[in-house]
Length: 325
Ligand code: NDP
Image 1: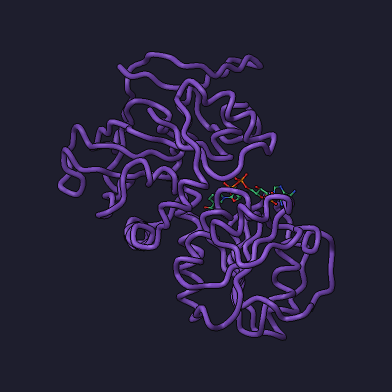
Image 2 (image 1 turned 90 degrees about the vertical axis):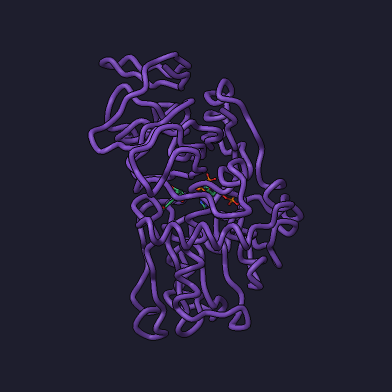
């Protein structure tokens, strides 16, 4: 038995509450993990508030991120006692997630926690930080070095944006933060931004080619912002697209791609391979700025999750929420 947040739907009746229930396993599971920490992401908040088609199976335990200790294992890849982190893979969407005392998983979902990273820190990082690091790996893989010019980070006050600013700074890049909360400029500068710009400069339709500014972009916003980011990227630069906070559309032109050789790279953390995750988590463990992570994160209890989900959807949360189980 375990304590968990449980989402139930019966016709038009929806409920989200804490319950005591039996741990469920899928056929391919070979790991049972005691969850120490989870986190609350936008996707979790949508599931808990019954907004948007996140949950594909009912009842559902939400929680796309979890970190804890393996307490039962039939796998040498994640033996009993190992400390592991699991994010994405449909957790909290198609299979029970991590806002629970325990989660049953196949071993390929588990990445062993790298040396130097605590379970709690890994959930401060969570899907948002993993996604930011996947963007950085793409930028590095494209050959962009810190001396090549500034990296634009959109949605900077959000989870992905904040983690991107922090990691870029630690890796020596100059990060420019685009935000709707310019009154929070000092916070963004403390965690890693060298400069802060008003997101209005990017969120209104612009010319297909604009002044060349960015060596690279980490965009969690999509829509017009993504189109403008591409149009203002320097010759040969790369734009990593990972989110859709402004919208799912892409009202851009091919001009930056065919006239400036700009690359648009799609980034997905949900189904990223175990090998890529291992590399990303290792890099996160070495590049993490613990003081900045503390500035970005706030800890809540499982019982606070429903209220926090409403705040997150109302845009009242800055940075990342760690859930102590
Ligand atoms: P958050 O809600 O924490 O942050 C999103 C940020 O986007 C906000 O803080 C805000 O930043 C900005 N924003 C919100 N609405 C708008 C708008 N209408 N126009 C422009 N900017 C806006 O979310 P996350 O950081 O966790 O996730 C960001 C995006 O990335 C989401 O779309 C999410 O679904 C996606 N995502 C994708 C992943 C992947 O694997 N590809 C993994 C994780 C997330 P500010 O106030 O600074 O302007």
